[in-house]
Length: 245
Ligand SMILES: Cc1cc2nc3c(=O)[nH]c(=O)nc-3n(C[C@H](O)[C@H](O)[C@H](O)COP(=O)(O)O)c2cc1C
Image 1: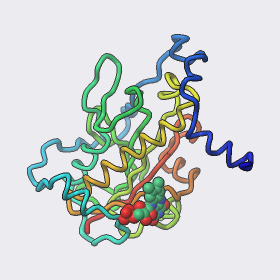
Image 2: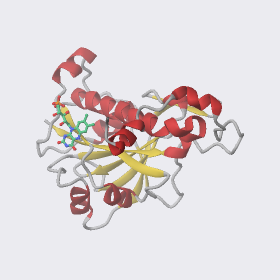
Image 3: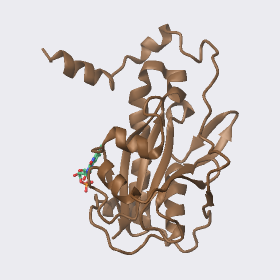
Image 4: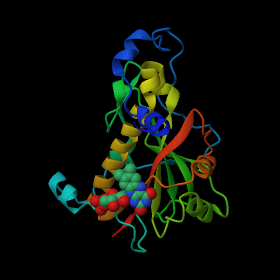
């Protein structure tokens, strides 16, 4: 017999899907639907990213899959603005809207789009160091946090794994978006979506001769605080460092 605690932990990723048919979800009760993505405050400094990538030499998917390995040691070379734009474009953008549903470069459960992406720019040309929200429907960055000690704070929050990465990606989830339709299945779907984002990032990094390292080992409270998210309805799920080879 499995210990009760282990069983409870595992149950989060093996919910009985058909039980959904017997409960009153927020959607079935016609409650207000959560917004599909965050739109930053008008006071936030906004950086418009580029959408044309003429400086990036494309590789085949087979090449990217073959060369992908977790990279934890990076060159001191800064990432270019175009390269950062490219990583966000392939990983996190809303491709199009249909009715009020957001369709992204990654699959999201029932197009509920639980995810947001934040970055910490540590060594990117033309971008001041700081934490930014990626505005996924506009392909822009909105400045969120830029204190003097930000580099050290981020490093501590990701348990000293910053090393000399150019960028850290933070994949967060706004749980009510997916719970609205899928209720108790939400945690499983959130984790899978974050995995999709990080996989796109790992492969896109290969295109720009960079490498990524997925990070699940981080301090939940510290990262959520630095991103200025509440840690309850909206929390970090997965991170990744990225830097040039
Ligand atoms: C869910 C998940 C969490 C991970 N968390 C970390 C982490 O916190 N720190 C780290 O250095 N590597 C982390 N990794 C990277 C793995 O250690 C790495 O993928 C594994 O050693 C296999 O190496 P490869 O990616 O080069 O194939 C994580 C990978 C996954 C899939």
